[in-house]
Image (cartoon, rainbow, N blue to C red; front, side):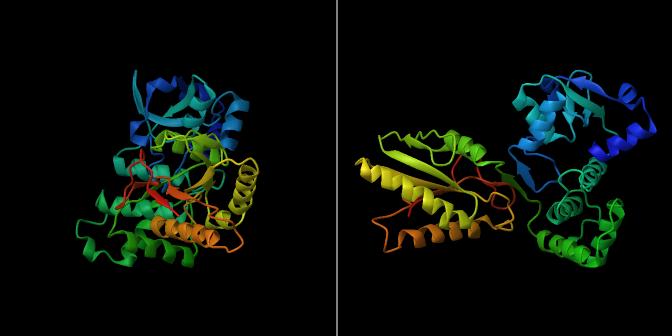
Length: 331
């Protein structure tokens, strides 16, 4: 359930909470199906500081999440972000409401329409296109002969299944175009690290060298005794600007103290919009940017010593192992 619909429901029925809401311990909610986040989202957040602060101030989730099943174990239908932050805060109860979907397909459309309102992070055109692709390929809403599907069929489906919003003609064309392009490859989902601290935690958990860092710029000694300063680059621009300043200071201080410190650049697309889903190309651009910095004739040696990339493709043709770094090369 979203904030907007919840407000309408309470306005219509002042006793809505007493009649419909109940509380569960997080352990009573089976979340395996949604560990990768909302089914209709193309991007999964690892954290949301603003949402966490709101839940902290309220002592729990203001808007109930939707679940089904019971009576002892329930299955989550929405509210992945809310449950994640509730658990992070150590809160032991989740405000819930029973779902009312009639089928797997119906559940999918309800989740998408819950994300249409701008009261929350609004569903992107990629989210909408991805849901349409899933409905067409997984639920066969337009039949099993995908080759015979026309653009007009997709447009009609879009208008019928998302009645809460009317799209401008250009927006409709953009969504339909995305669907046509993605029908050949299928659904997509990406992991988006909510902060550099989240990226640092993931790196510390999966890197093969035993490096442990809490934030960008932290130093750590690997299994062989080499000290590394680890920096997290969410954009190509960061490598050319902030990274240069940080690494220059770090290596300058190391030289003054006659210390051997190498720099490790950890790349990831912080919004999954810089790459437009083409993470291979995005990473190559980051590597090229770091290489160009290293070739600066005014530098005394390399500024960046190694580049690695965090896994981000959860669903797609090039699905990545979330327990392994994707790239690993000396620059």
